[in-house]
Length: 461
Ligand code: NCD
Image 1 (cartoon, rainbow, N blue to C red):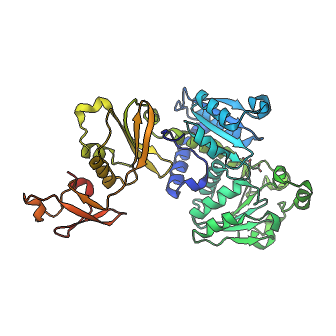
Image 2: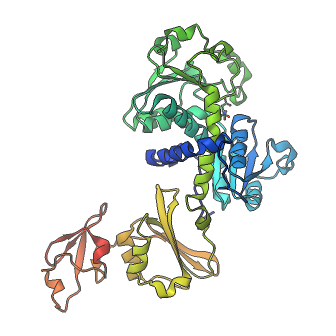
Image 3: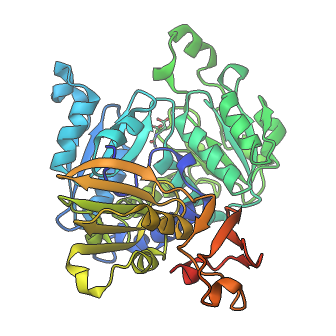
């Protein structure tokens, strides 16, 4: 909802940087003993997960429920919409608004692409995409990456062969994009009609990688480190006759794996239908059930991320009047307070949230100042030390104005020159003046002595 402040939505893997993904995977490592029931956790005690599954699921729905239960929280929701008001024609937006009020985080699976993004706009609380049609499945990707990292000691440099329905399979859309962030070598094996959509291939190529496209598993299997097998997504075929043409394509069995590297691992998001013969299950290659277990620690990490590390402080309570400065560069909130002249004596009306997960970047700080709006000079100062900060002006509990601060072209009267010998530092009747030399990183050139100042926060007056 516009103007609201909330935790981290997990909608598309594209919204995340490699660093953010690694942070989530690192949290998942700590979740393993909790997921196994070997360690107790009360981290999410009193928290409620709204679990809305408009499409069938076993692995995804139950691993979120298991993670929530292992972390001391509870789950409500439905596993098929027939028994809910969806059957009466309720819109997704209305269902989301209601469940948002009954829970603290929503996990949504829906047949339409973009459904989770829409839910994120209507929910105050974080929304986690558990699969939107043939779109994305980012939490499956997180557990897939977690599995590859555990089993292969890393992700970079592995040759991952992805086989099956690459057109409609949402898991492989998210996974291939994520793997390209980690510099894995990719081969896509599918019947030509089910190959990876161009849009995804282009995105991967924009990262400097060139995925191999093939319709022969035999040609590539000997060179694979990871074989990621997927189900042909029968339910997404507009024409059942088209499905019949490709049903059963690329089924894996033990004999085919004779050509494989000894340490090849075979993965599958599950459910499998006939793509992996059960005779593969007791080979050293099979990892799909380990992978399914990894959903629990990984979903635990996503739920943990939904509230941020400082979970209790994270919820931003509304204020009646004042200013909320959001998206402050992480670590800069106290400097923001200092440069706009807010000190300890008014602490009762000021709140600071540090190191909060951000939808735009990795982490951010937030400052909330009651009963005060910033003047243009103060806004310029904020822009100089945190150029992506967003100002929300709150009047009578509503966001009356919202804008991103702007670094001014010329900076006058709010900074001193970093050159102690500059004439502007010598009690002359002039205001120091600067021209912006570069914006990222910000560097200002003094109009009097030409000295470049990069240590902006230290020189703001
Ligand atoms: C996948 C899905 O729903 O996209 N399952 C899962 O979440 N583990 C794969 C599939 O249904 O084939």
